[in-house]
Image 1 (cartoon, one colour):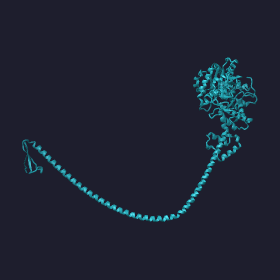
Image 2 (image 1 turned 180 degrees about the vertical axis):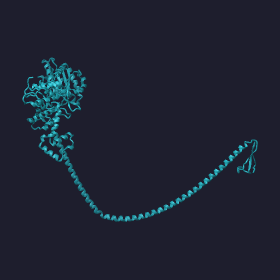
Image 3 (image 1 turned 45 degrees about the horizontal axis):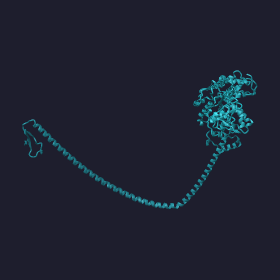
Length: 637
């Protein structure tokens, strides 16, 4: 390939997105460019998605837009739905439509006109003199691409919205406005059949967009997916720009670089393996650094030694960042700005707390506290880029891939170059501004002395840290003074109390002696009373003993009487038992006599009744039993 670039021109764009003017440097995506163009021509709305960093924006700029214009299509400026709302603009009906209009009508001086404007009305009133820049007018104009006499346009015009995932990531508090955005987009396409739309977004936001598909007439059915850059495409993207710049790679060197860029880590393995894809941003940064290293050297192919100097991807990104800072600081624009301030600006203004790129509004003199002259120098080194919306310039990093290398580089630089005050202030800010991390006494005095000679190097949080330290020191001093006053008052109070005690001691000594004599007399009287009480107690005891003896005597007599009564009752019971015994004997004998007489019927039976003495009154006799009954008879002896 013939050399068409100046020898000092770097044919690699580095981390930035390819522009339309750089389409001759864009290699490795020819097939994807043709397929995307064909898809857009065949469908009025196309959802174009790929992984982050795959090169969607570059493909749009270098292949889609030029291809559409070559065919005769009008292409509006690439739009965005994300971004902060400008100060002073109120009554915005839909923040996503508002941002889209601002990004298309870049020369608008009165953004408030878009606050309640519909998308159909906005597109119907756009006009352009060069087909590149568009302005909004109150009167309706022929649609972009229309003939001069206002007849129906011979070709459609295309609205391309890049980074469409901002509809999900931006303004989460206004999520209810997303559905209305899709309704108005669908309404604009229905109102103007010559409107074509391309929505470009990261593939991981396809799912959050899906619920809104029914709001569009074609339900977003036409889609185009761009795969990550394969190894063959990566090899072409490495080789072709070098040849275009007059320094081809030596045999096998481009393949070695391609294989290094394909390396991926597998979880659980220490060694890397060769993957299927290459990150375009990493490829461009490594090649850009490689080319910068050999610029000015004698002509010749790129060798293995040249490749080794470039290092790996992370090193290349960090080195690109650090080299850019040094170049910018060495220029005249760096007057009054230190490296620490510049690195802090990247950390706090261009990188969000969530670890993503942040947008900073550019004022007339400064951008987030950094002079605009230095910002322009950073732009010329392709570390940051600008975007104009409604006449307002916004600054951001050229690519998300720079976030982590910048943080890593700053994390190494700050501890090695900051003073004790700055390091402590950074720690204080990182740890939630704990009062326990504030400087005191000698450390604060040393920090104050350093700050007095380096006030221009202090960041805003370092100044806030010093203010907090001073306030804490003053509060501690007030507390110490109050403590000293309290101690003095306590000493005076104790002294007065001691004097009062001494006076009281001398005053009561005489009274004490009198009381002592009185107490002695009282004690003697008490002893006498005690002796009398003792005697009374002894008499009471004696009387008690006598009463106890008498009581015991009465109890003994009662016991004897009880014993006699018990004996009498026993004797009576014995007599009763004997009587019962006798009755039983008599009954037994009568029964025996009856049994004897019953054995001799008709005869007289004599029964001996002598044993039954006293049972029958009169002379002892016997009873004779005859058939007619018992008769009395005399007793035989």
